[in-house]
Image 1: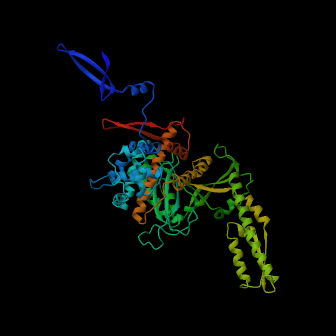
Image 2: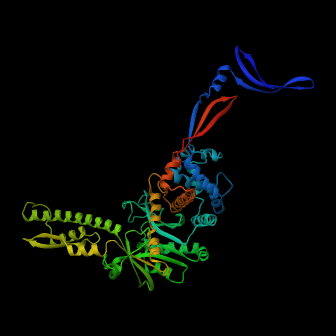
Image 3: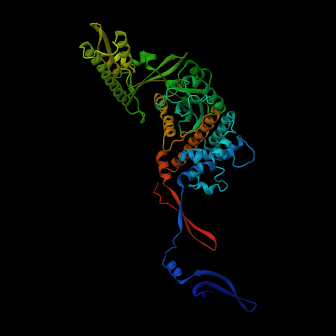
Length: 552
């Protein structure tokens, strides 16, 4: 039977819980538990916990979500199976996996990795990791061991294991390319990938790296990626990228009985279409420029041949189906008119017209002032120079056709007259605007299926938006300046996309309808609070709790 005793030590009374037992006719203490002085016992009875010395707060939600995927799919082990190194320190796969996790949560430089890492629950998930092992030098040492020819096998090993585990549908795939500007010096001779080109963020003054990606239509899984020179045209790059993709997925496509790749008209070329049209198990859905097929583009938007389609995702869309010999083969052609696209393009055309007319008006006013001798200084304009300036002002799409310009002579000084060609504007609105000309070699597909497949291109565009997002994007910052390190950077950024796709699949399987950005925002708010109490008997005492979460 247990009972309470007390002891007086240096004038202070302490209480203990004890239990005795009788052995061999003698009473002996079975156990004893220290309870403390009376005021602490009373506080405990009143439900008042002792006050912690301090609290440590760790990021829990996002690191735990990413770590769960990395562990479930053995991403680190799969990478290590390809990227061998000496048994020394952390593995190369660990550094790539950690970089991928960081890129998905809060992209930092390798120099700042430890400062981020120590404030997350990863600190206790990998107790063998310390500040020295996460120094920027250790990252560089491990990344530099990855030969460029090993990147593709490492990625394919990872993708193949995921495809096998998750049974991902790869029958429909989207392809597109984008570019990322960099701050690599113009005279840097160590890097051939970074080149000046037409940058999609408007930073043509900087060198850029082009990035190509194949993504599944279902679940948005990244299947294959590549990086290439920033000044190489999309259609030229596509020739090489598609060959590598075919080589990597030929056996899988054979088992899947074909794959259809969706790409936009920027990748069109005779050589590219020949790869699909010749006896290949790969098929395509693409589009062509209206100017290259004027007999289709000039069909009136109100023509009876354009019939409304019934698919719920194709509201306000009309279509006309035909066959035409393109790139040496009889292909299925779908001419579509989209009222939403029409409204957007019409607004863009009106804005461009107003901008051109404003510049032409300013140029005309200057010439009139010179004719009236209000302006007498400066170089005297010529008829040819004014014609060149007017052509430059109307360099936008359709502007030369919509705005007519006439340059005449007045006392040796050119005079500029211009007007909007209303007939040409009405014709443009009734034919080109709102139209797409879609082509495919899948003649057995329905019209709705072809249109929906082509419009699935938004999937890969959304992926690129995620990569470029300054808050949750995976590409920036990039502090590399050699081809090999840029390719490794692209590898772990692509692994981030894979982790996110797997994470979103789990979220959707749980019946939660939420975007990746919203999911990341909610996960980022989940924290672990570690209350640290005064040590007892020289042992650290702590208590872990989680910040309040909402229903989702």
